[in-house]
Length: 279
Length: 122
Image (cartoon, rainbow over all chains, first blue to last red; front, side, top):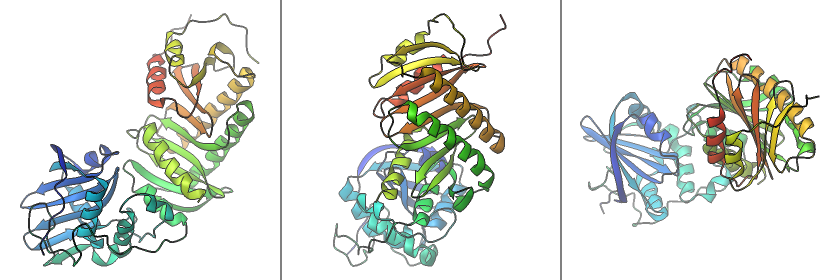
């Protein structure tokens, strides 16, 4: 049986960098088909979150984190965007298999937080993460799932779901991995009582914990003056960076984002995380 | 705290107040005085302006630490309200209180329009 990823609905073509693509597809679900030199591949995007990377040159396949790094090395890549329905997205994810799934820049294998299951196809994303460390990199003789080229499916009928990963308990590692890979996020940490519990991304955030706690004290002064309900988040927008502080379990998240990230994106990220904290 | 100041017309506040879900908007000086307030003001606007100024000060500390300043805006989100604080010039801030389901992008647009260059000394 030979299959390609679903055609989807073409919505346009562009020549740009990977960073630009990922930062401008925040509400997009579908595939970005790419051509670089003699090869071609695609990125599966699930409502702004890159879920899988796949690239093929001749008989060689690069997937997962290795493919992401390859795409990032090119200043300009030719991209064609195809919007997917939930079903098409699930089908594409099942076809591409777990090896193309990615994890955060830290490269550690992420567990699957339960909240991810609220998104269609998330289970397969989790499976991809779980096996990323084994499968990323060059692979000979891998099937080509690029659109309209024959590909050998992994023994599953069209549209069939890949095996589900059992739901695991909430973990701050999973949350940090998810946040740090959100486009525009440069680093993230969980802090509690003056100390960083865990962090991801570039640079240390320890020196921001003290002023962050001072800010929280000021925020708690505002609380009784407004009929507000509990704190959801504080975002401080600086000229060159956004700093977001949000309650998470018995501590706080501290997230640094690039100035191009807008408040809507930050709010969505915080609300997603809040669902985990209360799950 | 606060000096008695005559009401000041701030056209952008009017535009902000037209946005569905916005409860009140006020302009405060960096000495804590409320320059003008509009909409349905909170009972303790003076106390709120003092807390806002402290928040602005603490946010400046974070800007110093990560050297990505200056401060542009502070956005507080609670379960039932949001509070957006935007510096309009070197010594005044606009604070807008709204419901969380208000169009934050639209509020953001109007409060940013209010931002001016340095105000010449009187």
